[in-house]
Image (cartoon, rainbow, N blue to C red):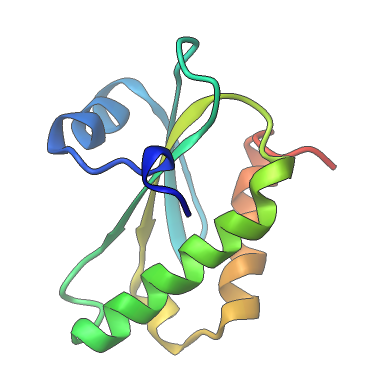
Length: 113
C-alpha cells in the first residue's frame, strides 16, 4: 500500500477514535471517519503487544495491508479507516483475515458489491 494511503500520526488516529464511527467482530475492530477533502481512503493499523511477539504482529499487519490492496478498488468513499486487531487474529491465516475485514467493510457499507 502506498504511503499516501496510510495513517501514521497519532493525532489522525485519535481523530478517528473520537469523531468516527466504530464496528467490530470477534477478530477486528474498525473505526472510520469520512474525509470529504481526500480523494482516496487512508488506512491505519494497530496490533497491540498482547497479540504476540513482533513477528506475529508484523505478519498480521502485512496480511491486513495486502487485503486492503486487493479490496482497494471496491472501497466506496474517501474515509480514514483504522483497524485494530484482536487476539484471535494471531491464529488466523491470510484468507480468514481478509474475510473478516471484508465482512466489517460490507456491514458498514464501505464496500461496493
